[in-house]
Length: 137
Image (cartoon, rainbow, N blue to C red; front, side, top):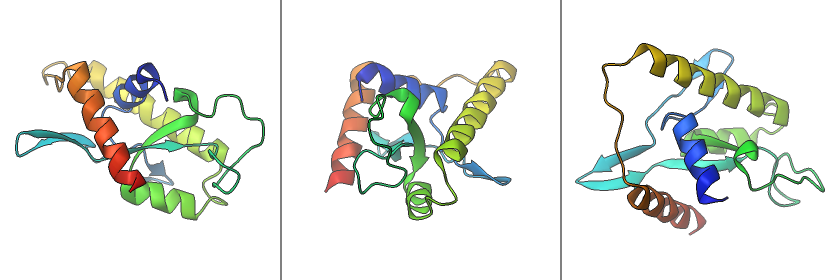
């Protein structure tokens, strides 16, 4: 995923897990400072699977590595969703993502007193890339 798409994903999700299914919401914070070090706890997940063996794989899908095919989740909900692909369909995940991002946008409009988490671009990208390496191990 490009750095631009990655920034869209994290900012539009409000730095929160996007899991929202049948009234159950997670909304856990996914990027935070732990002992002074920025730590990315979230996972950038494919909606349409990346490989043939991945959940929800669709052959010849053109936007596989873009913001539009990604949803930001905590590790627990990433696992739950991928282990239950018959329940968490492509349509269900797009609805989940859209609902979460709309809620984040509405909350931001209402909460003008809370200062946003300020992170330099380089620091953000390093933390996210570091967490992606941890996932692949």
